[in-house]
Length: 155
Image 1 (tube, helix red, strand yellow):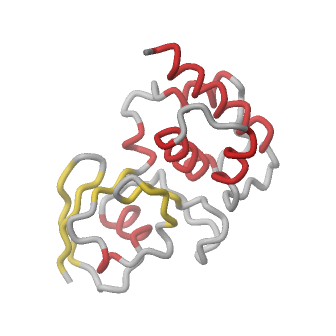
Image 2: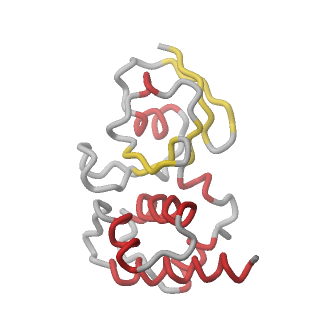
């Protein structure tokens, strides 16, 4: 099956089996290795990307459903690492092992796009399902608040 969609602002066409998960298309066919394989059943959040602005588990989304979609991966969040979330993550030393962080950042950026100044409860709800084995949840929450502050101050 041939499918065309946009990834990080660029048109991409792939010819793969229609049941191929987006995760493997990104990693194996488009060489975008930032999106991680975690559990493979959509429970951990490591593979989160944006599809038409919504955070989606790429391990569960079949490529056959993506014709014309606009997909953003961690590589598309900011080419130079200056997105407020990336800066806040670094400033607050959020990651330990770092494996889940691409998915965490993608979920957090979707939250901030909809809710510019989220409460702790809104952050917890939006980030629910993004599992961090190192348990850096409090630093993740603090970094989301910091990124929201950075975005507000940039206006």
